[in-house]
Image (cartoon, rainbow over all chains, first blue to last red; front, side, top):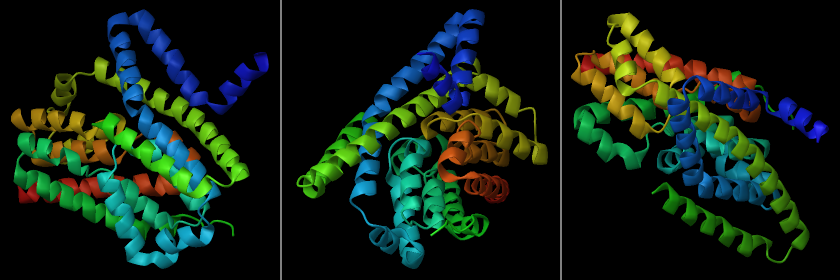
Length: 170
Length: 161
């Protein structure tokens, strides 16, 4: 048991600090801290199916898809096609981008272009399904310009980011 | 909506498993093992992120954040929006009303935009997760480029609207 606690502390230092912080805040301001924890639990349960699906997808990618296949679809050679595919995926996907980080890691390990992943995460900021709501409260003109600029950012990050990421070992 | 999508997503992955892994027991077991491991890891990390977001939201109301931002204008406004949006995060749907509050109370377009753009593009809370999974170089390069982009986007929208 003691070993396990040490392992948790070592593997999840930030997560452990968050839990400690939550406990401190519960003592200081129980009502607000409590509503924060309720928010966390609700959101986690709401996202649980997505988290499960992402985990299943990671297992699938690691066992079924070959490096060649992934490199062909979203690797360096895929060029603009891969970037556009990633951008569309990021725009449409539900749930926060960080839920998909381990999935992206698996893809990069298997030969995906980091530029494709960068544009996917970049375009995550657009969220097509929320646009009607955004337009309703912020106006059409603003929301259109704002999202077109984000799209430009997402696409250009597919060119910029690979320059700063060292080539992964073969 | 997220629940429905998530369920469809699970059904989709199960179909993939049935199509490709039905006949290969060894591979199926390996895939499950990997899935279980990443599910547990991801759950712990995401739950911690949600606790932080939940605490931030319950301790900082829309009015508190908006009121803080409204004290700044011009370049300082863009920077204040950038900092506030990078620290705070959450679904886009929670960010829009804060931007609306800033608009309605006389904040500049570029201030509201800097806040909203960094809200959806930059996450200090998830930075450690990004580094862990995608590497230090990737995470730092992506977030620095996002910061530059937020400033550019804020200036352009400020000029256009």
